[in-house]
Image (cartoon, rainbow over all chains, first blue to last red; front, side):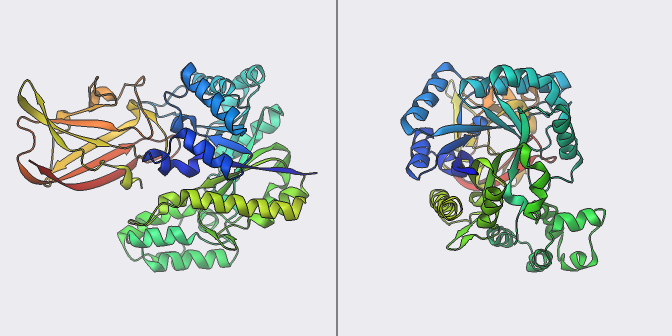
Length: 335
Length: 130
């Protein structure tokens, strides 16, 4: 039996927070009010001094968790390998930073952390004793453009399978399941001067069931003639590499990884009356149900950064619309 | 990306010490979606009416107490530039900005955890010094 639960990543409400329209307490109350069961936080975004947060911050967090009844599901963790301008951090420095993150999660009552894509595989083994001691699982994010075909992700997965611990896994970002290129990205970048021919070309790839990332990989990162023909300017040429972060994997790509998947980011560019514009959430939820997924699917709104100048931010409306759509799908699927 | 975070509106003012105008100051939000130690600021550039100020004349602070040159900030890891809090930028320039209208352009770039190129944001504002 599947047990699919709703969650909101506070990443979704970052503009509300940045511009002080809502503080963390307002945001937590909002998430609860809209019916989510769990909450996901980026400590570096909304907790001062992270990962060295004060006892006062921990108490405030506990109070908010208690008042809202939300489950603190997961903390999104980054690794500042480029902390210094003149060198990359050593292995020991990287591991020490991640140990701090594990201890911080424990202080916040969180049992899962997401490593941002590209976190190296060799952190896993030295971290395992800390994961066990603090009861915190670490999971690498599989994100479009940095997914299953990328050497760093492959190496992490290989090591994850080798250590075979319940404390190591994966987080899947649904941006790998785009069936159409997001039109909010097209509108935003058109406004910045990208030519329509570039987007028309990318649309033809999605129509054929593929995407720019896979076409570039298959061509050894050489641009196919059709793409060269679509590029009209230097601006277009600069922009094209930013278009590979929308991939078109079949859901079955998850088959072999299901036992390791701890969490999902339900990436959201734009809710329409019929669901998300680029991604088939209902199809994916049905797949997860059929594969007995027991975990959270977290709203991760990213249309905020593609809001056209002069247009109002739609973070709250989009989060609410997605939660309500997911609940409706789950009711149909899970009963 | 993140251009909208750069150069908070109505923050550009002259600063005085002991009755003398020693430069001008402006504030910016971070060109990233999370807070980072100051050492991860890749560069800050300020141009006034199309002329870039020398990098050595720039000082930055997250608390308006302790100020660092850009070179010094490269090793500052215990002061964090928080998401949602401004970075204060001062340009040490005797007399500050002259009275009247100026076009002030601010460029901010931060290094990020996994994106190979720094995330840069640029914003030019019309500034009036009265």
